[in-house]
Amino acid sequence: MSVDRTIANLEGTAALPRKNGELVFQAPWEGRAFGLAVVLNQKGAYPWNDFRVRLIEQIATGRPDYYENWLGALEALLVDRGLVSRDDLRRRAAEYQTLRRDPVF
Amino acid sequence: MSDQHHPEAPSDVEARTLALESLLREKGVLTSEDVDRVISAYEQDIGPMIGAHLVARAWVDPAYRQRLLHDAPSAVRELGYEYRADTRLVVIPNEPGVHNMVVCTLCSCYPWMVLGLPPTWYKSAPYRSRAVREPRAVLAELGLQLPDAMAINVWDSSSEVRYMILPERPPGTEGWTEEALAAIVTRDCMIGVARPQAPALTGAPR
Image 1: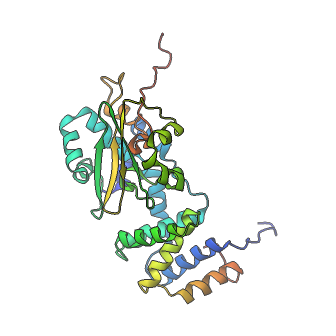
Image 2: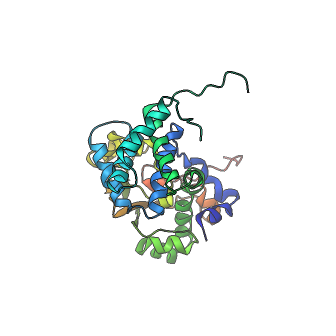
Image 3: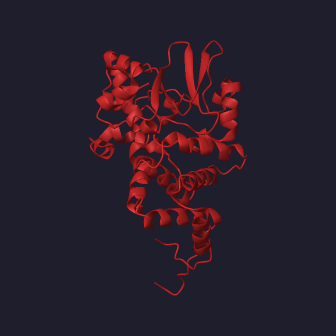
């Protein structure tokens, strides 16, 4: 039984703890960055620990923004694994920032 | 739409996230719907309710409690949830006179599979650095005053092991159903920075 199915079947008082679920992304991109890392792990792109090691490295730089570190870790891991190249990432990000590419997808 | 609809230029991190997702999409590695599904599952569904279900069952079923403490992943699956095998889950019980709490000093390891995503303070540098050094003060700041006589154990999560706390069942909940019990088990109780409270009966004569 999938988690989604299981949860959907819970109703009434059993559903109450949902209220303190309080998973908060402060901006949508944080949710996307989170979701990308989880989906890629689920699809077998890397073991979770490989991501975690890079996340620790990023946090150790002292940069305070948690999801910026998360994103940096994901970029580094995917570049190392050959799934994307630094050049492609840089070029594509610049296209979005200068609105040559529509950021609404 | 009016003529006012001009997209704002995304920030650096927004643009990098867009770049990553769009490149992976073009390579056929994932779809945007895959990402949507994960976000929604962690945001709304997984939350702490799986953990609350485990705790409530353990409170009403001593044999289940033993299985949960002995082999948590199997106990999670026993209640019909998925548990992916790449990290170990260990459940630590609070006992009379001993309180337990969870931290990840290195990053933000957290038992997502049963509690959903970690709260912001859990990931903060002050919590990560102070929880081990001065747990009593940290708990007090988070609203949990523990008597001096109560021992505090701090469990540091790692990639291999994620911890969840099994709180003590509060007095005043005798005869409650499992569903009613699950409703008072908050996320913070299972991180170990709060203890479950039986709410006073509303409207009951005092």
